[in-house]
Length: 119
Image (cartoon, rainbow, N blue to C red):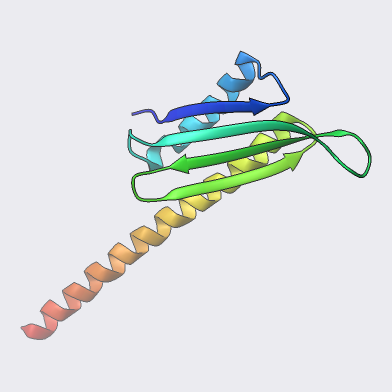
């Protein structure tokens, strides 16, 4: 099952190898989502106001059937910006998954205790 990944760029042309690199990294998140999940990656070149060097803005938005996740980053090149945004996204998704698991485990344990008391 592979999530659908959509790219959008502003003020920059994304090469196919850059898109492939980003898509391959995003496929690492497949284990957390169902097949009907959409991921949107926006890449934009901006001008920093203080020194005139270009900054790259990468935002990642994932729409799942139950949740939405969003991460963004500004860095001096596309790769660094994407890596930091992806790292933030991975931490959010993994943390949410472990919280959901813990909730299910606690609920199961509570039900088990209730049944034990009734005996």
